Image (cartoon, rainbow, N blue to C red; front, side, top):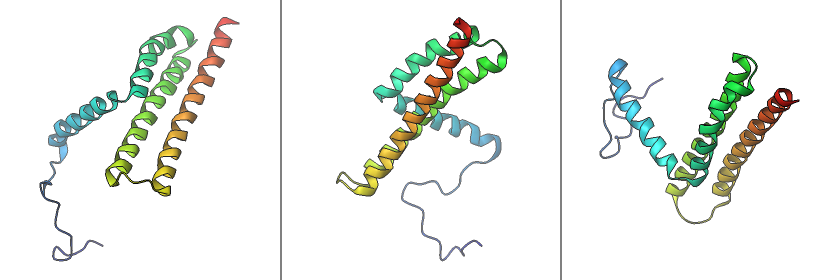
Length: 136
């Protein structure tokens, strides 16, 4: 159930009161996404992973024996990039809250970092298995 307007908190200063809908939403959404890529690029880990992706995505066409295998190899590379961007976003949100050390902030950052590690291990495992089959 929605709150009556009188009970809703006022929008923060500078926040738009109306968001565009439909196709008009695509331009601002694309601008936000491109801004996110630029912000992610500021992270050394993301730049390293993009560097690997630049090599791995085309290589997937050779390593994969079918389009499904190639797509899987590309997907696990994309998963690493996605997870790294989410980790960066979580870290930025935590850092925005305050600079002081807090157990819950450390927990959030550590869990996000663990997600990146799992995606890297998955990617490495899938690629090693595919290379083993291809080269053996």
